[in-house]
Image (cartoon, rainbow, N blue to C red; front, side):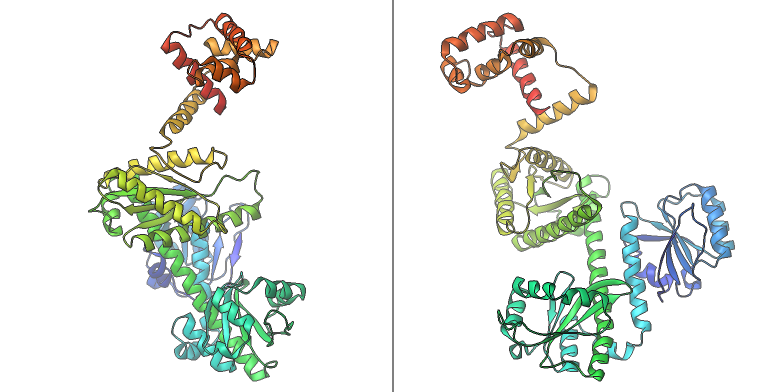
Length: 545
């Protein structure tokens, strides 16, 4: 059992913020529940010990009888609620036990993950923890966006500041940056701490001290690359999670009073950063639900497309994915890849929106799908989609390696599912192309896609190679005559012996001899077009396996 710590937020607040996309109230009255005392992941193999008013995540709890027993145990320990994967079984015993135990039952929306709901709850509950720290008065004075908050912190310290994320990217900055040094100016312009400064900070253990300290860290400049003024840095945390840091360019170390004010301000910065992250997560989730529903083509596709503003114009679906990794990934590598995938999807969405304000894009599973309105002319639509895809990959080539498949033009909502299928098929061809191309429309690679699907059918049925090609392959295995290669070269050269022999780097007479052996050993009539077609198809499938 895993416990997440000490928030001060009500169940009603959780439902208000997350109910639209992640959670539905199934049983109970949220207003009757006070402040939540913790978030617990239920493990049936661990002894149940809960903080007061805990919210329990019932991972894997699906049987009605098991739910009733768990509710009884939770009621005895004063739990606030139980979250179950939707749909929750429609068993009257569950509702009766929920009422008797005083435990609310919530359903986690299908498609959402336990990791998502845990992260969102942590954000909301850490919000309450920050508020409990006594910064309400400061909140009233600094209730604007993150840039307004940066200006307020700068006023407290009488120094220009930046607010940065965990990767030293600038999220916000105050005014009066002209009073700092060139390194700070470069940081603001590039929205990223310069690499030379980052290396200096790493070599001198500044980041290590920042990660483990709750106090402001004084950083002496190196006098190079424009890093002239000292810095005071402070970690921004929510509980034990490192969210980012605040950096002030100062002439000297802070006084005790200013250091204390800096620490108080960091709590408010944490609150704003959590709100930004929670808002971004909710927006991503909602947009992913709408895009996914529109692309499925079911009964809800029309409403989803309407909410996305995509009803009255032809559209094309683009599918973006990262190339397949060469080797098995460690857990840490999986985490990094998921973050890379989300960053690529966010950048893709921004690019499409800039190109057409009514486009929609979201990460659905491991693929980022974009839906873009296009001209009614299918040819012009295809060219427009390819150009958008290539422009995006050109712009991010130094940071993101991705592939984009493009589906056919959809004239209405029902056609979006077909366009998505085409985009997925084109993307699969790209993934298996060995990096020879980055963008493909399904019209360009339909033959390769069909061969891949035919290969899937052969593998699923367990078919084995038979007929002339099988006989040639068996003969080659024993005699090393390259009869299979001879047949392939002849077919690809349309029967031109000179071209085929040149492709195999042998004399034409040698090639003619081998071709006669192909006819004899394979028992194939090369004058029969059906026999040639069957042999060519088998050779293509052999090359894929």
